[in-house]
Image (cartoon, rainbow, N blue to C red):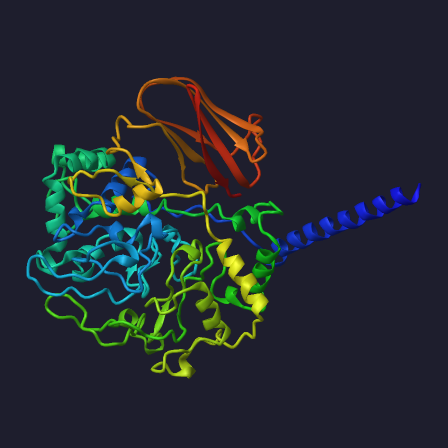
Length: 536
């Protein structure tokens, strides 16, 4: 071997060793920290996945008809262009003007009275279907909101309707809010039809006037398919599918050694070791669902423990957090540990939006928290202490936070809603290209769409192809290498939503490995793709 060839051989060996070493280190991080994929989303027994309910929930979510003065929708404070939050320090609900960080407080169009800001920062609706209960694990009865006031999405869906500064305004008294909104929906033929399609059993009970045998206190037959129960289940059906599970981190956990770069890998290691973030933000959802006293500086009006006769919390300058619901003095100033998925999109941070950037959040924890003078240092969470992070380590930790963003997931805004009112956030969504043209019909789709639920999934997932007209279609599952795994259907299908099940097995009946897969729908000359995450 000549000198040149020997030099090249040595160089190849060195580079190969470096690659092998890096791959070994990557695999070691997965094993070392027992990194797990996201589990299937938990569904309540009476509200499993139902595409008709998901689409109905989307329409309700963006429709201002749910607010007392018809000027605010759920989506007013939960905008797709701001990570399903609003980009504000404190939310501006009823009577506000504008959207996102530009939104300003206003006055009731009915009474002329001032409507103050909400006392807390808007939480994102991304991944709320995974909120945990006392066990810390995802549950259909998980804690909602900063203080855990509600349990489960179905219950929480009703709360904004009764709060003056959120959606109620001054249109009617607090005790009449929910029934007033339901009456509006019941008088809208389009909504009635959509609810009947999404809740056929309840619709049948109305038609046949069957007694409500399960309701001990009132067996009177249902008078309408639109009730508190069906409303809550429809809105939560839409929210429960807002899951961001295809981040660079998830692809790394699934076995992609190059999904995270060197800085992100160092940040992952810091997250679990020196920075100690994992002591609270543990598991694949990056939260243990606990409530902790961290001493974040209290800004804004705070949340009082008493209310005026209009239902508006009296500004106190304090927020006692979980204590307002638990009554346990150890919970004074305790707030829920939020999940970190999509965290880079939802600034500002903490219960009152006191920290403007993720850099500010890292600095807060690096100095050991405890900025709020009214919180006794002895009551602070024992997991808080000065970390002594270097500037480089802070940059790596920040890089890892950004690696928890799923850039493949989008929430589309309907171009119109059954009330005829302007859908909340439509103009922002149009600029970002996040709009569904027209009102999506649940019987004959307006456009070809491909999606699957649940996602991620374990045992099986339902692949749905929406066809506006009859067509020859071919539906196949591929792995990330582009290799065919399973053919689900090939042939003629009529207009409507076509559904087929993939049980996670290949053509030979063998169980496929955990990881990311693609489902392809060939409709005429066009091919449509959607991602699926199989979790074993």
